[in-house]
Length: 477
Ligand code: GDP
Image 1: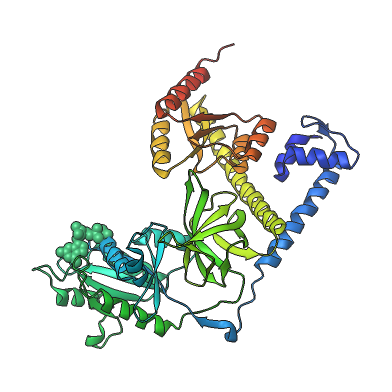
Image 2: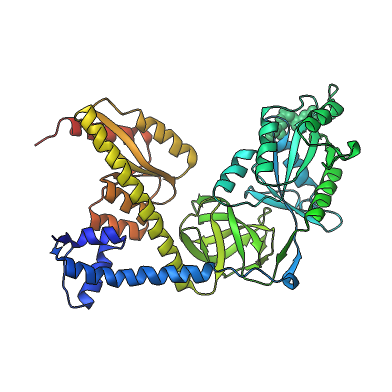
C-alpha cells in the first residue's frame, strides 16, 4: 500500500507544494508524483493535521461569542423588508421612502443601489430598508441562517386586495417570527377599497387596531406620496415595542446583503452592521474570505469612517467575493483572519468533494445502466449572473445521448483555488467567461494539471465545447 504525494495533498485539502515544502523541511525530498509508504504519509498528515486542528481551535475561539451585558446595549434602528404581491407597489414604496430621507434632500437625491439604505426622519430617528423587496431574498437569507429583518412591511394594493403572494409573505414573516406592518397602497385609485382589504387581512389573522387587533396599518399611495410619513411612524412604533438594542462599543459583526465584482474596484459587498462599530482599516473574516476595510460608503456614495448597528455600508477590501448571507466579523490580526478564511475554505472544499464523490458513484451506476455514457464536466465562472445563466442553459443544451455536458459548479467572480481543486478532484475543465484566475488558482491549476479556458464570446465557447465533444466521441490517436 502506498500513496502518491499529490494524492495525499488532495486528500488533506492542502497545496501539493506546501506538502512538498514541509517534507523537505523534515528532511524528505519528494516530488508530486512520488509514491510514499503509509508511515511517511502518516508523519506528513500529522504535520498538517496539527495545522488543521490549530485553525479549528482558532476559529472556535473567534466565534466564541460573549453576549453583551445589558449596560452595553443601546437602541438601534429597525431593519425593514418590504413584501407583498407583484405589482402591488413594493418598489414604488421603497422609492417614495427613500425620497423622505432628510439626507437625500440634502444630497439632491442621487442614490446608488447597494442593497440597503437608511433613512433619517425629521425627528432624528432612523430606519434601515433592505432594498430587495419580496420574500425570495428574505427566505434565501434565512435559509443561510441570516435573519436580518426586524419588521416586514406588507404592501397590499387597495384595488386588488389579498393575493397569493400576499399570503405567502404573511407565512414567511410568521415563520421568521417577524411582526408585520401593513401598507394598504394605491388608495388614490377610484376603485380602491381599503376596508375590504382590512377584512381580508383580518381573516388571515392580521386584525387592525381599530377593530381590536394588534396589527398596525396605514393607507398610502406610494405613487402620490400620501401617508408615507404615517407608515414610517407606525414602523417606529412597532420598533419601539420590539425594544431593539445592540452593543456599539465592540468589534463589528454583521451580514452580507449583496456582493458584486466591480471592474475597477474588485470585490465589493454591502454589509449590514448588526453589532459593534465598524471602522475604516478594520480587519475582518467574511464567509470563506477575509480582508481589510479599505473604504466604506453609504447609499449616497458618501465615504464613511465608521458604521454603527443597523447601518448598511458598501465595503472595499475583500480578498475574494463573499456571498449574500455570509457572516462578517472583525478581528484584530490579519494573519488570524487569513487562517480562519483558509480553514473555512478547506472545510467548504471537503464538503464539496464529499458531495462530488457521491455524485460520481451515481454516475458510475448510470454508466453501467446506460452503457458507455461519457460526460464532460465543467466548472463555470462568469462576471455577471445574467451571463452565467445564459451560459449554463446553452452549454447544457449541447448534451447529446452520447455525451452529457454537466456543470458541476457555476459561480460569479474570479476563478478561485477552490474552483480549481474541485475541477481537479472531478476531472473537470474550468471555464472563465470574462474572468481570470487568482494567482494562487493559476499556480494550483498548473500543479494539478487542470485545464482553464478563457472566453469573452459565447459562440466561441460553445464551438470549442462542441469540438471537444466530438473529440470525446471520436478520439484521435
Ligand atoms: P412591485 O411589483 O410590488 O414592486 O410594484 P411596483 O412598485 O413596480 O408598482 C406596480 C405598478 O403599480 C406600477 O405601475 C406603479 O406605478 C403602480 N403603483 C404603485 N403604487 C401606486 C399607487 O400608490 N397608486 C397608483 N395608482 N399606482 C401605483
